[in-house]
Length: 191
Image (cartoon, rainbow, N blue to C red; front, side, top):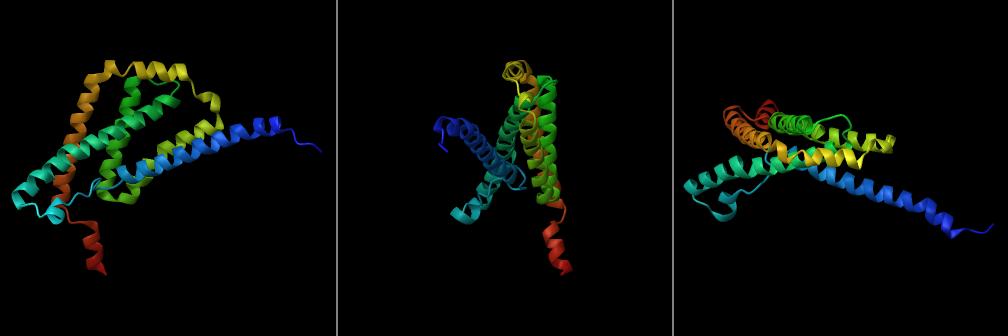
């Protein structure tokens, strides 16, 4: 039996492309959910690292939690929105933005309750989208996705409201978490 290398190439090329795509997507989602699902997205600890004075440490803490965290979370909102736009069939741009922000806000809120729950929520949608893509590859439509993306500039005010919302949410979560005893400390006391 003679091997037809053109046939081997024709059979294995799509397989290799699918494997590479799935691995890259899986690694991306792994990094995504572990980043977004943590209560403290950044671990800067400038006071300990550089001996930042109390006053300046407080200013940096405010900048970190009221500006850097929300901006990072908002970037992930953009990522979730794009993922949904790629696989959306019957959604509007505003509907996708609403769903994306609701998911990201839910992930942030649950990160303050329990990081494992938050991480599970953060990986649920991206892996569900991968499942939809694998089961029905025809579900994906470049033209539909492009139309949704073209609708983003018309939603700029909504996006700004969402940015203000995520900043306010992070502020409220930080204040509430400051006054509510930490779960880990309570667990240690029980032991």
